[in-house]
Length: 289
Ligand code: NAP
Image (cartoon, rainbow, N blue to C red; front, side):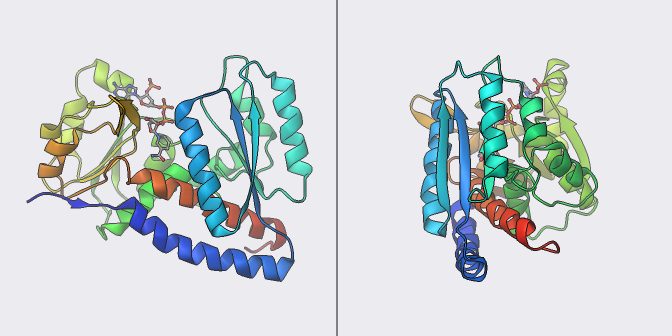
């Protein structure tokens, strides 16, 4: 039997209704709009698509949107100056910095400079550290989207074999910690796992499989354990088509649940960003929020 499709758009729509209402309520209560600032350096087409989606969903949610776009030769000093301004600006609720960054920009220095109260991508040391402590305050949008999709299956994660492919700070690492918090048995695979030729062995064991690499077809359909929950985070463009990291047609025949690409993790990630803006607004005004 083919897998059940985990429709990220549908889940995002439901969450969006709740967020919209909360935004109306917060604006009435505090008399100030919510505003997301999006920092974009260079011309990466995938980032442009993500920003277009942010702009559209922010407007649907009643959240203002400010695009801060820089050419790829921008200096570290200029970016730090902007971060300082956004940290101080009372009208800005939160900021997100887009990757990849050009070589001259040092990511960790910038992330250390962003106020944790305005870090709506959950990547500052403070917010990322909270995930380690099992306490997601403002967490990575993509990692939270992955967890929402897994929860939508209603599968009890306790003791389940969870395999994550990819160990980035944005996706693989926080997802691993969040799954561990639910007492899944977590294995994280990365480039060296593949180099040793044992990626397939790990994937075959996975009852929960999360793949976040960005290499189309990396995960072969026949590796999928029958009945597994498969969350494909990868986004690549092949012959003008957007595809994930998992061989979808074959994977769908074996998995119990699977996310489509596009239409799985992506739409939910944007909605998680809006949820983080709402959280940040509350943290800035109500200590116990
Ligand atoms: P990233 O920072 O480039 O991380 C990719 C990870 O994959 C790294 O940990 C890398 O390991 C690992 N890797 C590379 N080749 C591998 C291989 N052959 N076998 C196993 N692991 C391998 O990327 P990211 O930011 O996590 O994003 C991953 C993918 O998700 C991209 O396609 C991105 O566009 C997509 N994405 C989608 C969303 C969404 O909302 N749908 C959000 C964020 C990202 P090493 O570092 O050790 O090489």
